[in-house]
Length: 116
Image (cartoon, rainbow, N blue to C red; front, side):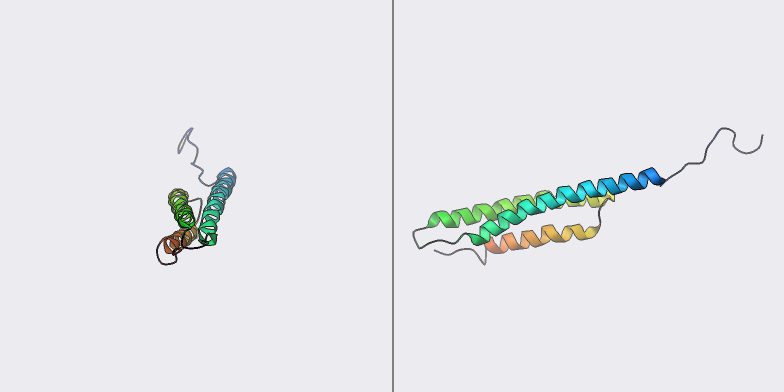
């Protein structure tokens, strides 16, 4: 007998691994889209809340709470994006959406915040 008796060549990247990668990417994208929808809800809520007058401090508080919740969701989606990109299931452009939501929430908390 010549060569390698009983050893088979290693197969990497067969049809099953491609389908597994696509399913993993679809699941990751779905999780991130749901996270971005929740973040979008908080950001829109923060921008829609306006005080009725100088006595309406509750509206200012609600605006800050919504923007803070948006920042928390942004941190979670950024960490998930980092994990999914590191594994190789998603591309780097998925970092753009958390950055956009974070900028919008920070602007609402600082420069564009409601004034009494």
